[in-house]
Image (cartoon, rainbow, N blue to C red; front, side, top):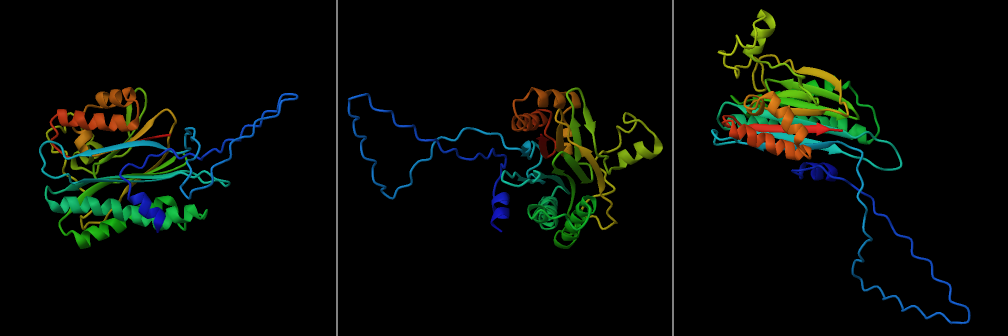
Length: 311
């Protein structure tokens, strides 16, 4: 379908659509008493060329503001991360809430299997939700299943594709489906979602990692678990064991940003620095670009990916 091709064909999808305004022609001035008015020069005949439209004043679309950035870092030869954004904005005679789908995946394995797994994960999740949620939404129909079930099934469909097409490949994924001001989060692995408040970062997802499991079940402090490798995951796409994605629903406040990122960012840049960078930046895109550069400056030991979304 043409609208899907247009969505997938854009790397940067943030736009500010605007409708053209047609200027009213000025009223003809009345001739002075007793003085005949000069005849206006004849209008040129149409030549078949496209006539320029009058200037269009800038307008702000009722939608989401977002930026994104990804980088291989300084150590790895390939970027095994993948990200995907779908964003719809509608302005017309009816009503249709803006919808955004934001996905970040971190391929695992240090070989081509990780690169293919992350690529397949974001595309298959987006394909499933486009069919089961975006198209019904555009037709103003209620989806056939609750959003939580749709997200979980989308992740499981991606997992099945990876198991079949990329044996031995694996990937994490974190995604946010935003409808109006409602945010539905889904994740597997240790790619994270945060709310970025003016004074703090609030982690919204819990890593599916061995170190986090020990912290949660055994009550040890994060400092005590510092010697345990943080990249040992007990759940990821591409693993044959039963998949249980994490899900959470929140509201997106107007005074906070939603951040999705891989451990190439949160494992390299301190939270205080992330917070300061985001609120000092002029736009979400500038913030994402600066965060990637800071992760590189801190060593760039892993691939780095980040998406920042606000209202």
